[in-house]
Amino acid sequence: MSRTAPGIGTPGRLPAPARDAPLDPAWQPWIHLLELTLVEANDASWVDMVPAPVARPEGAPLLHGTTLRLDTPRAPAHVRRLGDAIGLPGAHDIDASELILAAITRDDGAITRIAARAGVAADTMAVIAQLAAKPLLHACARALATHVPIAWMHGWCPMCGAWPALAEMRGIERDRRLRCGCCAADWSLPVLRCAFCGEADHHRLGFLLIEGDAQHGRVETCDSCHGYLKTVMTLSTLQPHVLARHDLASVAIDLAAQDRGYARPSRPGWSPDIRLAN
Image (cartoon, rainbow, N blue to C red; front, side, top):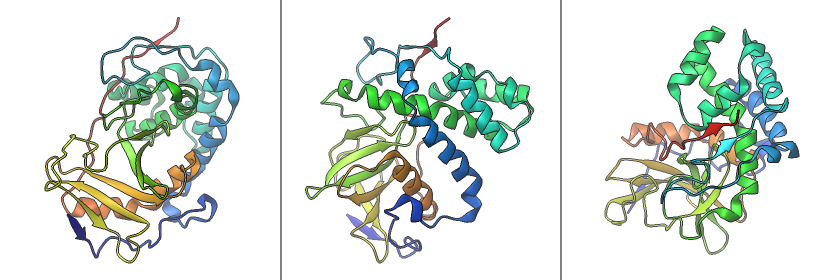
């Protein structure tokens, strides 16, 4: 069931080349931090910190039950770089391992405590935590991709448990691939299935068309959980930097979907239980 939404689509075509995508200047500080992080994520040394998969319950992401080794200068150096970029007081005193663990396990209480010690707002520290964890999460997604179960039928990320940032309708066949905004993992889910609640009744599922550009993007909706998921048509897999820019460039679409009563879950699909090595 389609619902054409006139208010959606003021950005027009979703941007293809990440460098040239027009973005609101207000996002520039975040974009700068994101660019620093994506450059850092390309460093091969993060792969050395990827944990080995372990036995886990059905439905648990691959990182669940693992032990992380973050005894490397790269993690604290990255956190300091992020803090310095926004003039964060006490950035050099932040325990990078503690912050990264809190980000991956979605431990809001730990992030709030770290923020209090650093003398900054919890929301600011939450952003730094997300970016601090991204290089390791991207390394995990690359190194452990072959361990993702072929029959994975959950909407949350099979790597880290986060909800997808968007869905790609990929290739000529329009294969639906969900993409994680935290680790950039890539997994398949049937078209007629809500990523958030699993609803498969086509009478409860629909989409909002992006006015003037329905062939390039839309918003999937579910009337059971009132969730929504941005969708983009693409011939090939979006690279992590393009994925991030697509997500940022389409904030107006998020707002338009929310104005129509749809929302994304406030909590992740699965918060993995992870330990730090001593």
